[in-house]
Image (cartoon, rainbow, N blue to C red; front, side, top):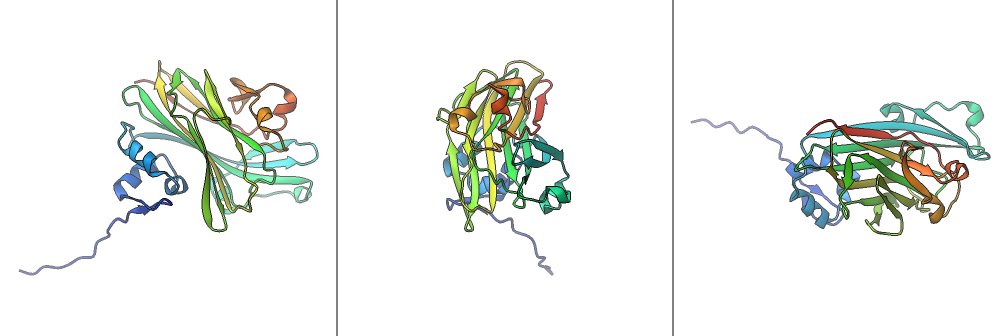
Length: 275
């Protein structure tokens, strides 16, 4: 008998920052909810919890929005333009000559929201705001990221946030816990204020996640990320209610003055039509 040996590819494990390896099968599941940076920085305990949960990793809704923001540094006024994925990834966004001065600042962000199919009346969501390395924020203050929900309830203790950044070739993170000083838990959702790091960074992303209980259908989730274009404190960044009339259909600040501290970027949303 003649046997012919054919070359074949062996799936490699995904190596994480904590030193543990994620098998290819698990990695492909996580990829439906997280990007590689989030998976790389995932604590081992969290990985174990996710893999032992009833989360439906195979059927996931996703929505992406790529935004280029031009701000007047004197007035604080900002203008958002939706751009293509290619423009975001390459940094090749057309900026008129008059705006290429220190009077103006630019930023490019990718806002992504994911939502799993229901399992026992529960869904899991993740949201990432990933800054383009070509247009990182110049103002580093308290940005806010959050969700507004309808016919959902947040499972208390599941709401988490993380700021991940790369400096000197190393990834680092700041974690935000369910009942910390930076979070605002409300009946219609929650938000987290993230003080953007002042380090010399080459990559930056802001992430949010949580478990939601479905009360009725259709059930909807709105996600928003608002970048502070001036320096503010934590208390000011938390002076909002979760409201449909707010920035990105999420953040309704207590005064117009505070609202104008933010770039007013549009939000994203997904829904569950029926069970």
